[in-house]
Amino acid sequence: MNIIVVNAGSSSVKLTCYGPTVDSVMATGMVERIGLSGTLLHYQAGNREPIKTPVSIRNTAEAVAALARHLVYPQPGCLNSLEEVQAVGHRVVHGGEKLNQPMVIDAGVKEIIREYFDLAPLHNPPNLEGIEAAEAAFPEAVQVGIFDTAFHSTIPAHAFMYALPLELYGEDKIRRYGFHGISHQNVSRTAAEFLNRSPENLNLITCHLGNGCSITAVKGGRSLDTSMGLTPLEGLVMGTRCGDLDPAIVLHLMEQKGLTLPQVRNILNKKSGLLGLSGGKLSDLRDIIDAMEQGDEAAGNALEVFCYRIRKYVGAYMAAMGRVDAVVFTAGIGENSALVREKTLAGLGQLGIAIDPDRNQARSSDTREISPPDSPVKVLVVPTREEREIAGQVMAVLGTTP
Ligand code: ADP
Image (cartoon, rainbow, N blue to C red):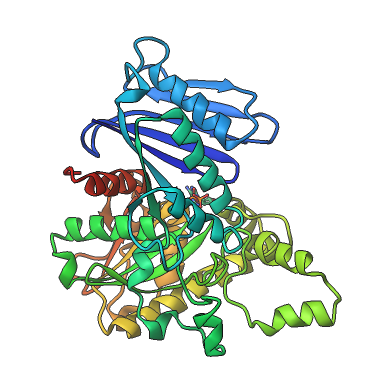
């Protein structure tokens, strides 16, 4: 049995081919800079030489088709034929209230994914394109949707409701949905395994800090609250997204400064976050830290705002759960930046949270504990394995053991 995982983003497509278990990765491929100059295809099967080649690929469909061809070529490829693929799992960002668990994709499911184009304009359209391209490339396979919102479908109403007129929820479904669910679910499972504890008895705060950032309170293996909301704009400070704001700021920008709706949307999504705070120069945390070390005050402040926002949420989620067993850091920043981890949790000893400086600095790509050995609240770094999580959930839908 072979399973393919497709992760189709706005300018890249990643494809992973699995054998019968989530540990049997047979090939990985990616097309990046789709629709831009310098489009590149990366591919590696087993321990063969990796391929990295310039390609003229214009869209998601062409990228999926090109990566699929590599699975069977050059002969013998990692597969003899694309008909050996039993299922393709797709990461879909917004599944709303209706698509709240992994499911086989049919015409009705595709229609719902389309309904959420407005709420996830950068993500759901390429996700759907990836699904349709995979239907063409792997005609024998079942297509399965794994939704980033699904893990958060357990959030109770008091945490998902906004204090707006009720009909805006009833009719327009305006509520907190939450995102990065595949990652939060994956790292909370891994953290429970690492701590040798049953997920049912564990309260975790999981911090997914990449270009997009979100934080989740995971109680007994289920999402209890999360920082992203109706869209992936709310919550933490991100690379270019603002996170939490007084909503009156939007009105002020439009009324007092005369900005148009597309201009405001552009500011909030593309010109804010670390980029905005650093004076419009830097959105990548490594660049922010380099600039700060060279005395750039705005970059230093950007880092302070970034860490303080996470810290506030850690406190809020401790209160929401009543007790926390571990704080988990993941994704590009969470896994790699000892400085962000240290600044975020410094001085929280009264809450039982501490970081051991040597453990925090040690570099490793494995799951690890960075709190002192006797700390009541563990602090963990857990590499996120979203593709593996998707493959496991697809296998569960097919009724096979991951
Ligand atoms: P995406 O949300 O696009 O998947 P990633 O999870 O790859 O993003 O995270 C990208 C972020 O991780 C960038 O801000 C980058 O600077 C940061 N990052 C990656 N490696 C390091 C590192 N060694 N130290 C600090 N930050 C890092």
